[in-house]
Image 1 (cartoon, rainbow, N blue to C red):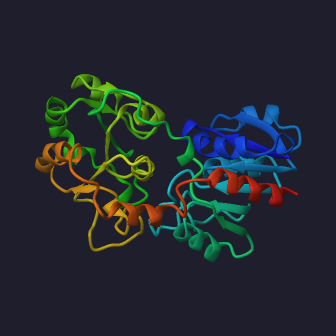
Image 2 (cartoon, rainbow, N blue to C red; image 1 turned 135 degrees about the horizontal axis):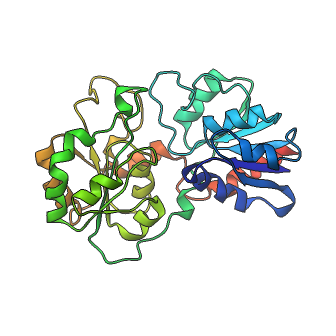
Length: 305
């Protein structure tokens, strides 16, 4: 039996397709936990079994509960920043993981090098098959921001660089606002008259274009065939390569470097042909755009046997 442990919706969104693809006989407990794991301590019946998680935070909870077999599925494209931070592939403090499910060979290679005794499998991203199709009127643009994370200059938000032109963008195109769950953006959007949309599923249902600084959602949205616009900040050094978004797969969409370029770039993205670099960027981010849940479920079943 395999349990599912998650402490946030964006972690669950990557695990639930795997869970749904498991046979009923393999499904153990599925539960959400708070940051301390308190609910899990009340719910777990057999913590010596197997569990799947999608974050380092939940890995720590699973380990504290006594799980002996832990599978970690990346909750995104597997971006890393060459810092050794445990939240990213190849980072420290992941030694309790016996199975890594990776979206691509880049992330898998980092975990293989750091944890040679663990099993590492490349499956793609189970989230992609579950992303909603566009179901609203065409032409809506969504803009999103990373939270102000100080792990690296590349994990900082580009919002301060573009703050003063977002209202101009809202005048030029129908705009909805989104943000990383740890970024407090709702009040800002309210002040400039932009609707805040908290879930990425709703963004996918409503937006024709997705604009963001640093998030795996750039790759996820592009996988649906719709355009993205990539926002760069002066904090993001061009002379340093840390993979994927910076800079090997930055061709996932039109790049914007300066605030004065934003409105034109977004407006053009609504009508211009798909950049030739998008497919190459997607191939770096994902081993395949379909079938990851089924591949992952088969591997989980073999691992848990």
